[in-house]
Length: 227
Ligand code: SAM
Image 1 (cartoon, rainbow, N blue to C red):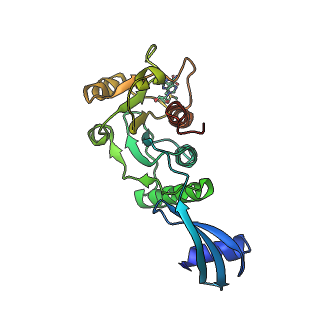
Image 2: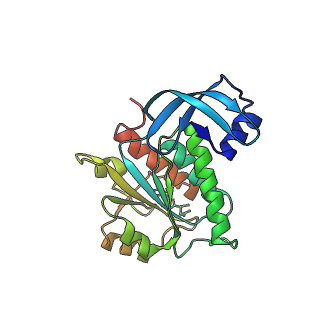
Image 3: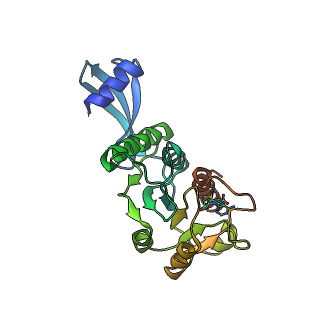
């Protein structure tokens, strides 16, 4: 096995690894490889694959988070924590009350992709969560095929457990609003597209908290977050 320059530099300069050391390699294939390093120079490294097994870090339930754009590092927090929890894809959404950052889309996308990559490595994810292009709310609703939940603080009775009960769930779309929340007309439009408003309890969560809590609760309820 041959390693690319960034991985070589991380192993050599950050992890201080050398020939004979063992590493676990994930290549977004769903497999993880147990590798012994043979050679490591300034810009390249090679190793011998000792064994491989299916990467254990992937949940059965595929959750896609459609997150209203957030100010500053809050959006990055969502990417990092939801990657750790097991979300498989992110769709940044421009909603009526979303704060659209001033920087270029390309710069933002590259930084977000790096945060997902680092979080996936740290969490030993077998697959890299996908980062989709920014879309507007209506487009996002059209993209969300299958069971689509819209956590909304205005929903006072229906909770996650009641929606998941008795269903065979393999995929869930989660729509989380921006700091200012969803507007009533957006909730109505989402319902027209088949989305189900759900409550995350009587306490109002910050936008960057809500996605992590909802994804964790769904995975736990479906047995995908430990025994
Ligand atoms: N209207 C909120 C307020 O009064 O502060 C602002 C929205 S909240 C900070 C951001 C997002 O988190 C909401 O759009 C919703 O998706 C989700 N959220 C927060 N708390 C929730 C709750 N208790 N139940 C359902 N969704 C919630």
